[in-house]
Amino acid sequence: MAKHLVAGDRLYSLAEALRLDGRETLNLYKADLNPGLAQMLGLLRFDRNYVRAQGVSVWDDQGQEYLDFLGGYGSLNFGHHPPRIQEALKEVMEAGRPVILQATLSALTAAAAHNVASLCPGRLQRVFFGNSGAEAVEGALKLARAYTGRPGFIHCRGSFHGKTFGALSVTGRDKYQRPFQPLLEHVQAVDFGDLQQLEQALQGRQAAAFIVEPIQGEGGVHEAPPGYLAGALDLCHHYGALLVVDEVQTGFGRTGTILAVEHDGVVPDILCLAKSLGGGMVPVGAFVTTPEIWDQAYGGWEKALLHTSTFGGNAMAMAAVIAATQELVQEGLADQAREKGQWFKARLLDLQKRHRLIREVRGRGLLLGVEFNQPEGWLARVGGQALQNLAQEYTGALVAGQLLERHHIITAYTLNNPNVIRLEPPLVVTQAQMQAVVDALDAVLQEAKGFAGLGLATARTMLKGLLHA
Image: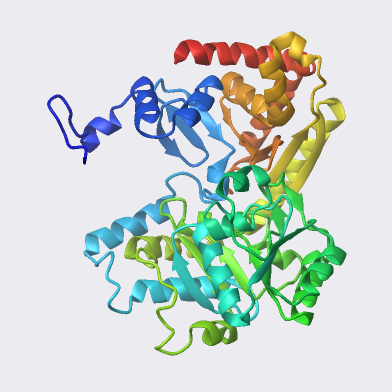
C-alpha cells in the first residue's frame, strides 16, 4: 500500500528546510536517507551544519569558518558560489528560456559543446552532455562497443570510474563491486602504469576499449608514469581498441593544464568530463570523441537516438558550462593550479621530512595526496580493537577528523586508499590558505606524536560524536 500523509505528518517547505539545525538534519538522515553514513560522519564529527559558503570558505550555524580543501572531490575548481557562474544561471532564469525541451535544437547546448570541444586536443570534437561522471563513463563504454563491435573492457586496479553498473564494472576495488556481482562480463584489470600487462590483455582482440585516469584520484593520487598514456594509445590502436581517458576529476585546470592529457601530449579516442564542468553549481557530465568514431556509432538520423539523456543539455547546465569554460581560460586557472600546486607540494614534502607518520606526498597541480603509514597491532591496546581496525584502513580519516575538529580544515580520504587524504582545494585558493593547512597538519602530527596520540585524539572526537548523537 502506498504511504500517504496521515494525521500529524507534513511536508517541509523550503523555508523550513533552510532552518533545520544539525540535530534535525541528522535525525532525517537516519530515518529517510542513509543511517550508516549518518553514524560514520557523526562519530568523526563530520556532521556539522554548514549554512554559508563562498570561495574556499564555508561557515557553520555557529558562525565558525572552515577552509574547504576537499573541494567537492574536484567539483569546485571555481570555488563555492562563483559569481560568474551564478550570474549565468540568473541570466537564463530571467530570460525565461525553456530549461528542458528536447524536441528542438538548443542554442545554449550548441554553444556549450563548441566551448568544450575548443578546449579539447586534436580531433576531439563531438560532445555528448549528461549529468554526472558515471554517466559520462557509461556513455563512453557504450560508444566504444558500438564503434568496435567488441564486448570487452580493460581497466586498472585501483581505478575509480563511478558506481553505476558499467562504470562500477571498470572500477578497481572489490569492496564496491562484490555486493552487485555479476557485473559486466569480459572485463579485465591490469596494474596501473604497466604497459606489458596492458598489451597482454589487448592481444586477445576482444577489448573495445582501455579506460584509464591520468592520475588515480580515488586510488590514492597516483600519477601515470611518463609516457604511459602515449604507450597505451599506441597499443590500443595496434590491437584495434579505443583509449578512453577519464578526466572527470583531473580536468578543467586541476593538474596545471586545462586537461591532464596535455602533460603527455596525448589525444585519446574518448574523453570523459564532469565535476567542475558545471562550475560547481549544476551537475553536468560529458564525453567527447572524434567525428569518425561518433559517426560510425551514432551517425545518421536512424542512429541519432541510440544514446540520449532527458536532462542532458538542459539550459541551466549549459549556461553553467559556457560560463565555466570562459572563466577557466580568462582567469588562467590552469596556470594558477600549476604554480600554487608546486608551492603547496614543496611545503608538504617538508612536513614529510619531519613526521614519520607521513609515508609519501604525491600528485600534480592542486590534486595532492598525503599517504600515512599504518599502525601496528598495539593500537588496539590503546584505543580498543575497533579503533585498531579503523586505523588500519582509515588512518587518513583519523587525520582528516583531527584537521576538522581542531583546525576547521575540511579534507577527506580517497575511496580506494583510505590511508591517503586528498588536498583538492578550489583553484582560487590563496597562499595564506594553503599555509594554514600546512600549519594545521603539522600541528596535528606534532600533537599526536605517533599513532597512540592520534588514536587517543580520535577516540575523544568519537566520544564527542556519540554524545552529540
